Length: 232
Image (tube, rainbow, N blue to C red; front, side):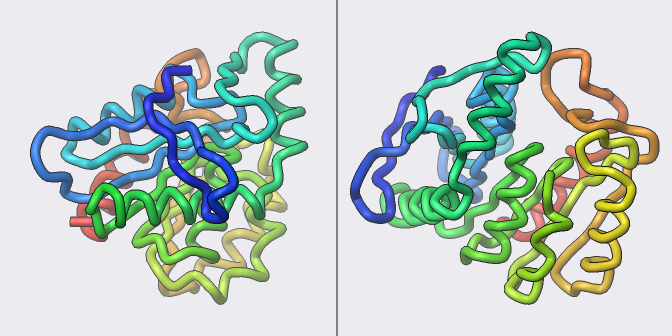
């Protein structure tokens, strides 16, 4: 994995590897790009590079660094997919949110960028929801986030804008979970939900057969406008 930076943890007990891409000139804001279960792979790096090209400081932290830094696994290889699920199953999400807090602090204090957003995918979509509820991040976006229906008890703590992209044919987030998310969040003043009829999990992946170009373009356009509004 092409990490090129080390970010101190909140407790200063370790260093979080991250792939950081700086824009030309002064950043208009910063965006944390939160990985899927497969690591900071080529697709996540491509997303970070895309945000930097739009004028944002882009930071993609290595979520599983405490287990094994630098993993890069394929969703199309059965063995590697199982490995990725195992890493996700062993991941301490509460500690992971502390790492996100550390990244936010590093961006603001060390990089001098005041407004910070986060965009996450799959597991990262769950992290986007958690960041909105547990940190002071300025704006968050989650794509096909998993297990959000089980975390609706935290919705009262969401104080800054959150957008969630929900494919209706997501085989990891079933119809009942989607219904619970809508019932729990449709009337939340800080939350915007978008459904994508007939699309499946991973539809906005940069590379591979999971990608749906039209759906990805629609969701990414909404995300770009959302961050332009809330990060400047």
